[in-house]
Amino acid sequence: MGTVGFHMEFKIISEKQNPVMKRREILVELKYKDVTPSKAHIQEHAAAKLSVSPESVEVVKILSEHGKPAGKAWIKIWEQKKVPLYSAKSEKVPDSTKTEPAKAEEKK
Image (cartoon, one colour):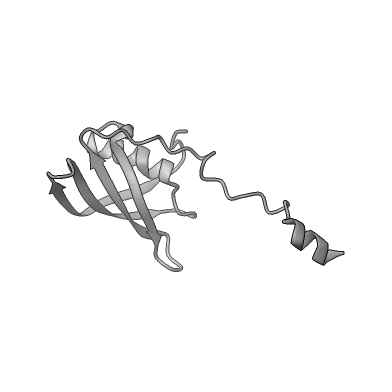
């Protein structure tokens, strides 16, 4: 994975403790260049910034601002739950060259 060459500003907008669920709930503002960062990049960056293990960081949602290299992310930092590490491989868009059988028949 790794964020080598990927620059992102990360600013905490709000943070609250949820003692019942044993987690922190954080809303962050993101500023980046070019493309919206993946969950993997945000997970790794948040873990480094907040001094926690990446396995305790759950990226719930990423919302980009229309037409701007900025957005927001909702993150949960779990005390005990282990979150699977996101990877670029699991976030790939399905291959558009594969067609469904019905669509293949329409093209004939």
